[in-house]
Picture 1: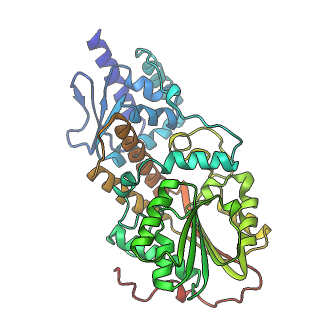
Picture 2: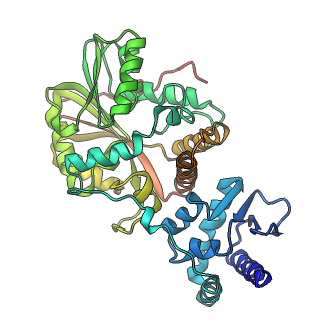
Picture 3: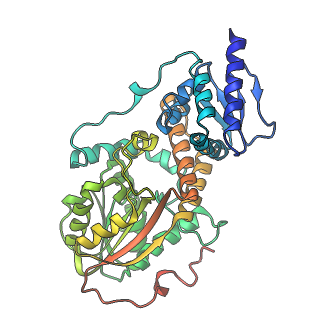
Length: 418
């Protein structure tokens, strides 16, 4: 019986290889038998006879991701190569006969329970203040030490800005922080609001190098604690503060507002509310910089994905024109738009490399978290490289803001990071 199961898995593997031109990974069974190129960049390890069934039934990226995260399969070696092969299997739609043959074979494998019962549940109204706080803490309140293991020393958890692919992550992130400040044209004595401030890197940079007063808001208590520690370390307590607060609860007026990697959490139905609130908080001649991920899909796809289930619950990506329309409908005028798509692919690849070099794994929960982030970040890098997702920095202003001609002020002639 075991020999028959091994042969069936081999037949499935050979069918998979025939469905795409992508270089195949090797495959190793629970018995130790291995198939595929001896020099394959990656090896898929089947931990039990039903692993491929758990991975493919029903077919979705959510189910496939769960099979890896919960160790039905393992990926040894280059995870990018394994995921590129998986992405190539999308071509199966063009081969219905082969696809039917594949699924018939997969369904001959022994049945095994999936992981539906392990999927996180959420309560409350979608994008209400309480639910937004819950889902943000689910992602970010998982230990500052864990995020420090793969981020740069300033713990910037957003797209870096590379001028060359050989730039270090630290240099590219420092450049991004400075680019945001330059696009906002910060000047001494101004007030800056950073919505979704993370661990405080941007507000600290702005205070140190542009002599501004800065307020950061986050929904993560763990982020706020670390940000305050860093602010104190730099001696900036009199000019920089961090609050655990929803952006809808912020009061006052600011000369500049930054929102970096936050508007993905807002939701399509709240985009108008989001930009209207930032418009109200922005001073008469202020500048707003919105830095966020967008999608190339023009029709909403509401299917649950691995990322929307385990990584960014309730997160929603929108086409860039939806963000522009919402911003301008609020009364803002868009003055500048820049795509950083290749930069995020490079950033994510550096994070994956750091994560693999610095695994913080002592418990089963640590192992699950490590696998979740490894596959999410590698898959996201490939999505940016293929153009499925994009990321834009959009600068918008109140109408009374005078024009600044040209863009030379946006990047330092020599930022010292090259």
